[in-house]
Image: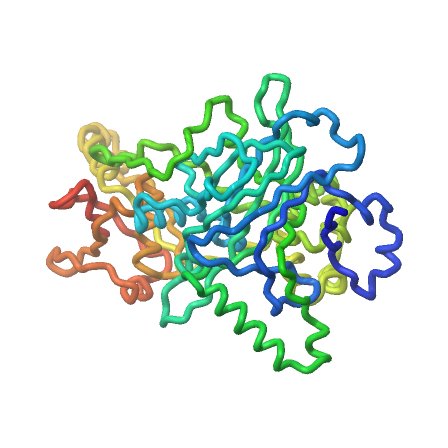
Length: 467
């Protein structure tokens, strides 16, 4: 008998509403089921999503199960399907900067991948592939009628993406997401069948076992009444249904590179060059719900913004329905913490940056001045003003660190942060003062700077000077 993942949320205040939901949703059987053979944490509250701890580089089995009812999806009988595995960020803040985060990881760990398939241990997978420019993605074909198990290895650890402060920082959670597709009439695997994901944290070798033990010991010390508020630890982790991954890199017609663990290198040209590879655009920061949003699109919006737990309660809600909810409504439905978060997301409330500065490229300024000098005589004779007009770019800083400023300036120049060697501020008598976190924290709000670039002495990188 197939294992059916437990449905979400059984809040007492919604017993009547839940009973009125369509029976199809109550006993929905998904076409496929994916089971990660690793135990869930016992320190997860009842209605929260499960959390599973993994060891860095260890092979973990994911069983690919055909869960179809008799006669369901007959078009894939005797045919292969494609599954794409991804390790992505769970936190939305990191999702917005995913490309920069992964690019930084690539530079710190040259030649390594974030996600790999342990091919010798896997069963039933056909044509496994890993694109060398997508370190967190692998894909393969498989036959649902045959036993299929894929063993994955996650090589990044959760604390590698945590801001360094004083040691002992809490690691960020990741998601393992699986998207499965069938062939279209052209033989391309582009027709989406099913997607599921689960939340994980990755520790240094043996760290996951120690964390699991610590959580178990903490739970044993709790009173029976407190224990009732937490889920039991399950031996395996069932991936729960989710929206398909929004990027559409898998629907292109070009063949994927063969499976390998090499990473592509790129070089910086003279001037404001860009890497040879073209990165995928990050997800939009503004993802506001609109009154015209359909119920189906509203469900996807809830998934994207980490409200998957509440999608069943809002099954038939359109964008207009959700936007009509008051703050008290959503707090009553979702509880205080998630209710406030959902209300703020619905209203599209933006958090103001801690510091805003404005920068202008010096090369542009010099060109402007030269043009003005050529026209100065005529303008003076005509009595026109000779005011300068320069284009500045706003840089918004949240963390107030030199690393963050480097990343933001690199984005402005369309280069990698690694290609900026140092950032200096021009001080008294023209001296160059190395930018530090403390200096940035003392910048005035809306300060203006002219950016000058200078080639570094030793390699193909640049010094940036703020004037």
